[in-house]
Every structure is written in structure tokens, then in C-alpha cells.
Picture 1 (spheres, rainbow, N blue to C red):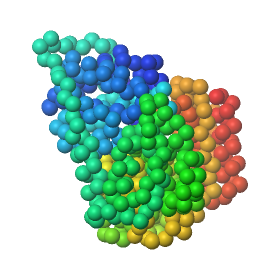
Picture 2: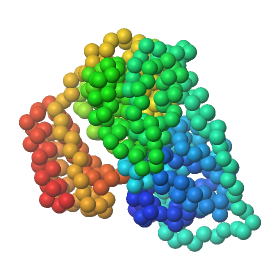
Picture 3: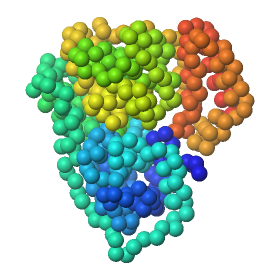
Picture 4: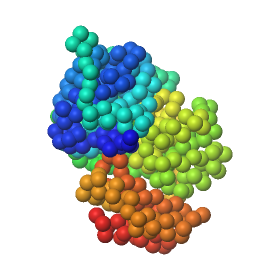
Length: 447
């Protein structure tokens, strides 16, 4: 039994096209109700701001209710907020309806366990099988009921602000916030203002269709310009469901996530609040980060791409912070998953403590030469076909041999989009280009 629909971050697709249909969502809700919800007989559901969210929420709710499961409707809430509070809701599981950084016409369903972690592959494979067969045995007597839960946001905000010891720790900070017209649109500006920051808002008027549209962490160009024109100290952008963070300096220049993570670790160490003796990142993080972290006296662990792999390794080694170049950063003392707002607050606290301009702090270290290309492919099925092609595997193996000991080669088929990512980094710039061109050209022959 294997996953056909669920990727690294749930199941995703175009709204009203399989599998993002009301029929599929209803069956998935029923399957989850029968297979997973066996203790509390309750589930929590949250969604982002895209227009199809209510349709999928209604369909999932119908499926859970038919299986005798009560449904707590949390409304619009960021993914990290849901993972943060799920343990306190006394539910068997939670569902986040979102397509993260994708455009409005996409949507997705993330299944989250009662402990805040995403479902394991074997569980989602079993649920897929149940949905395909749809031979559910349901009772006409045991039906669930809907509970509107307004406390979810309050619970999250209490946790999100808990590390801010002072009343207004961000006083004197002028920041541009781009909320991607997503889940943080009404939350993040208010939190930053409550903590004393001067705020200029972008992407804070969601209408169901403008989520991630020319805004947010995937399209930060307007934020860069606004920071420069407004003479702000920095810019902060999140994506539609709030689990990614992108920061720019006072000159409107993006700060890579590897640099952000390292700066935050150094700050937490300085104030005596860094847990463990390691940092976790992925194979796509720049190879210079590993050397810098080890020179700080910390252990460094590299995982496959995806937040789930990062969190698993962090739990294994007892690590305080981990993340990836895409902007998913997990601060384990406050977050169960990547949290754009909490990490932004931590970064701002570190910035205030440092006292210098952001442009004077970064880069902390120079990056190794690298090539990172995201190649579009017709379909997700085609992605798998190309990634498993023997000729492609052979070229990747040759590239790995050339870079062995001096760099890293990664071929990453996206689990959420029809794309194949090629990443090569190392000390020798000409060799990095030669090796990356080998792989890219082989993939382009087949895409």
C-alpha cells in the first residue's frame, strides 16, 4: 500500500478537480472519522483565506459527522496556529485546508495528529485506500455535531507572545509586513503593533482570490521597494498559510533562510535559551552553513527536503531549531511546525538585541557557489516518471561522483507542485555549473 495522492505536505490540487472535490473531501472525512478518531470522537478543522476553503470545509465536516465525529470549526487560522494548539483541544486529529504558497485556484488538505505532527505515510496510504473503496459502514444513530470554536486564535496568541518578556519589546522598530492576503492578514499586523513596532502593511486585505497574488514570501518585490521607500528597518513576508518566513534588510535585499536561522541560533545561545547542541537543515541548504554551524561548536544534521523530515530529526537529536531554504523554520520551544510570525518575532528580538542595521549584520558568512533551478513539468505524474528515469539517475550519479567531498548534488521532485528542483553547491564554481548543466539538460530532454 503506497501513497498516490498524499505528498510531503498533504494532498493538493486544483479546486473542484479531483482530488480537490467535495466528493473526495467527504469520503476522506468519513475515512478519518472511522480510522483515526477513536478516543475523543472529535476533530478540529481550520482553513486559509482562499475561496474554495468553505466548500472543502463543508464537505470534510459532512464526512466526519456521518462517521459520528464532532467537528470543531476554527475558521481562518494559520497552519502553525493549528499545530500549536491541537494538543489543547482534546481532539483526535486536526485538518488544515490550505495550498500554502500556491495561487487561489489550488487548495489542499493537511492531516495533523493529536500531538501536532503531520500524519505518517502509512496512515495516509491506509486512508487513501479506504477512500478508493468507499465501503463505509455507518450508523444512522451515531452522528456528530458541529461546534463553532472561537477560542483557537486566543489560545495561539497567548503561546505566540509568551517569550516576549517586556510589554513592548519591539518599540522603535519600523517594519513592513506582507501577509500574503492569507491566514495572518488580520493577525500579524496587530501582534506587531501590540508589541510596540511601527507597522506598514501589505497583503492584508484577503478576498478569497488574491491569496499569494503578487505578494507574500513568493512574490516579495513590492515589499522590497516599500522598505526602501519608507526607510523601514526591515521587511517581513509570510505565505498564504503562514508557515514560511522571508526577511529583507533595510536596503530591500533578501536575507537567505540559512542566514536567518544561524542568527536566531546565535541569539538564543547568547541569552541562554537554546535547547540542545545541534541545528537541523536539509540537503538544499547552502553547504557553507554546515561549516559555520560546526565552527560555532554545534552539531549539524542534514535531512531530505520537507518540514516533516526536519521535525523528525529535531525530535531525534533534541534540537532547538531547524529549517530549510524555503523559509520553513521550526523553533521547537514555541512551534510544532514552521511559524512565520513567531520566527519573525524572534528575529526582531535578536535584531533589537544586536543594535546594528540589518544590512550591517548580514551576511554572517559567504555562501558557496550554487545553482538552484526549479524546472516545470507537465504533471505530478510526469515528475515521478522523470525522477525515476534510468538515464536521469545515471547523470545524477555521475554528478555526485564529480562533487564528492567538495560539494553536494540534489535532485528533488516536488511533492506538491509539478516541478523538479536541481540543486548543486560546492567550493568550485566552474564545476558546480558544469555538473548542474549536465542534470538540467537531461531533464529538459524529457519534460
